[in-house]
Amino acid sequence: MASGSDMTEIQNPVISVIIASYNTRELLSRCLASIYSALPEHSCEVMVVDDSSSDGSPEMVRDRFPQVRLIVNPQNRGYAYSNNLAMAQSRGRFIYLLNSDTEMFPGALDAMASFLEEHPDVGAVGSALYNSDGSVQASVKSLPRIRSAFFGKRSWLARWFPQFSATKSELLNWRVDAGTPFQAGYVSSASIMMPRDVVARVGDLDTRLWYFIDADYCTRIWNIGRSVYCVPAAKVLHVEHLGGTLAGWKQRFRSMWRFHYGAYIYFRKHSGWASWHPVTLLIVLGISARFVLSFAVQAIKEVTGAEREVYG
Image 1 (cartoon, rainbow, N blue to C red):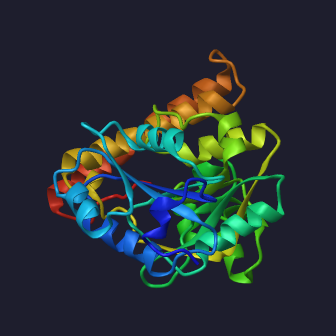
Image 2 (cartoon, rainbow, N blue to C red; image 1 turned 90 degrees about the vertical axis):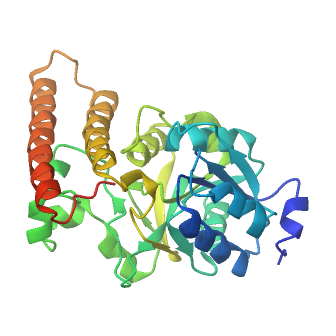
């Protein structure tokens, strides 16, 4: 097993861990500590891309984790841009994108890398993601389609009827408990590992997207004939949305816009319907109506101080 100091000397690591971070200093510190506290058997490098944080994140990385390859962007150009930048500079045979608001369980990296080594037809794997209370997050899903609007993660029907067959066919996290790897439409970009040859064929993350990045990328992986799996043996704690991007009301409304814009971009890229087709008009109207309703509800919550809506 490599030591922390050894990792900087590896010229051809098996795994490149890439973490894009914006104003998540202490979360990022815990994330990095979880990686270095139980290093994988597979050799790896760890890269952090800081998106012009104002909370001292780069200084923290340099001070506490000097073995990390640190890239500091002069401005925040978004998750996709930062990951594309790091992927281009990474050296690993497997590229692993990890959110800064995560903590890795021992063996997670090895479980994903070993699965990819044993299944060369697989184009991406994701870990099981857990909430702080130990519950499994709905981070493994079928590819988005019209039905997802009614039985997806944020729909009321999914919340009211989690055991309904349509809900369980959309949200696949219930399969994690069995402990065996299973095929998924897409896995969360909070924790996703891909072979370098797949990334080379699929290309960069879509920089227009802040949300639906993972759905878009996994769809593109499926389109080149490679499959996507979840590996439950790989466990990662994901404390969602405690970073700097949703810290104020402006950011929350901006995130709401980005979510719905992302839904539109994904639909236009992958639906196959022409722009003039009635189905396209129907979907666009539906996304627009949902945005207006969500905006109104969030405005009420902001005024009354109620719990904010969370996207992602």
